[in-house]
Amino acid sequence: MELSVKICGLTTPEALHTALDDGADHVGFIFFAKSPRHIAPEDAASLRVAARRRAKAVAVSVNADDDTLETIVSIMDPDMLQLHGSESPERVKAVKERFGLPVMKAFAVREAGDLDTIKPYQGIADRFLFDAKPPAGAEVPGGNGVAFDWTLLSALDDTVDYMLSGGLNADNIGTALKLTGAKAIDISSGVERAPGIKDIGLIDGFFRAVNAAKAA
Image (cartoon, rainbow, N blue to C red):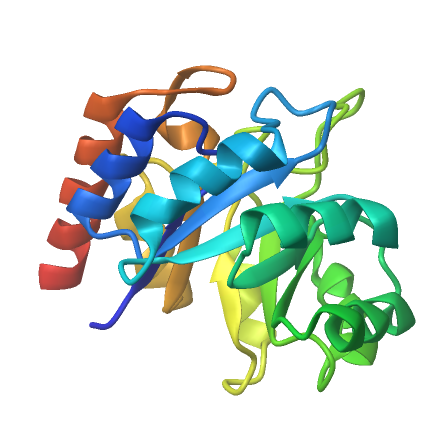
């Protein structure tokens, strides 16, 4: 099976090169000060160089204004923008038009009705990302290491292009793929030894599990 893999929240050359060598075709950089994976545009730009012609570089932001996005785009030169906040359909459309980049819009899922929230964005966002709703008290909307009920995604139309995220790791990725048939996955905390600290061994182990699931 064809499967797109995004390793998100990268901050070091070692983690980036491991992700690329293992087969990641998307690499994510987070621009959100409250996140333990926050990175400066200049640092992301230097890492982004290694990803050219190997993987799409995704700039992740949360309710960022135009000036912030302008800084990120001009310095880092991403291939895609991921909007992980409460951005409206109008905001997504405006961002696409202003920056001329594809946009992936993230949605938090806990129950079936949460999937209805994508409807106004269909035909505007280029791809969706489904993450678990953050636990009470969480300061960041993603990367919390919690999963949602993957069977909920069976209600989606087959034409919906999405990336599965939230609580994925080497132990459960096989089940997640079997239940959802997802063609794209995103992982961050599941390959970390501490919040924001990617573990080379966990990245390798995750890709071994992904490859085993694909073979099965």
